[in-house]
Amino acid sequence: MTSNLQKFFSFSIPCVLAVALSAPAFAQKPGWVPVAELLLGSMGTADANQMTEVMNRCTALNMTLSALTAQDSPDVSAGYENQALQLVQNGIMIAMNTEKMLTGIEPDIETLSTNAIDAVKEMLGTYNLWMEDNYNDAGSYFNNELEIEMKGCELATKFILQMSSR
Image (cartoon, helix red, strand yellow):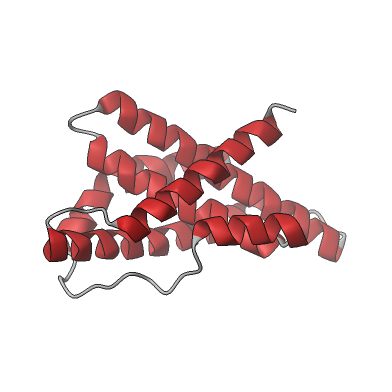
């Protein structure tokens, strides 16, 4: 699992800005449920699918932020990249445990990793389009809704760190 993820991260982080710079200017905020709402909802109902989506979306957002800060703040960029790796690994573990509970069979980790990577790649593109649209509309990649998304991912990261320290 780790080697597949490492290949993905070494390929994807540098490509994030290239996607953002080539994105069409007419992108809109995605119709996603906010991360904080998904996170709180999944904790209250033990919904593994929602929690996996939170992990994948926050992975994509952290990778995007890593790429945006790489040139000016390499340490900050590395922090975002590390968080992204922790989040995607957690998402894969959630999917693995869920599949095992449902089927009673050990899941194929390579397949689960590939599925997570595909989901994150799609979300990377969506975040890049959203940020490009923000920039074209207001001269900044960030707006209130994206900042709320970032806060939701900060909460998810803290949750993961707290769970892993137990």
